[in-house]
Length: 118
Image (cartoon, rainbow, N blue to C red):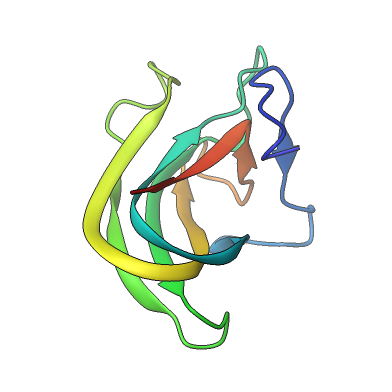
């Protein structure tokens, strides 16, 4: 599970889903968002570690606004929490789009995702 609070568990996109792959998070209500955190799969082989991403926010899950994009520097050798901050914005939904991974294949894996609210 991605939002279970246990970094020892992991979830991977289904094999038929190819990069780019989206993971949508419904916060249940609008919040003032200012970032997100990504923890790669902590398993021994760390499959699907995301290296390049885009993060979108939305109030209705239909209209999305790009809040941040970039790369997780040295994440293959240092698969720890990756914290990204962006301009404060009101939204109910967050979407992490995995663009590339460290294995140069089509897999995207997650131990945990946190959305940072004010």
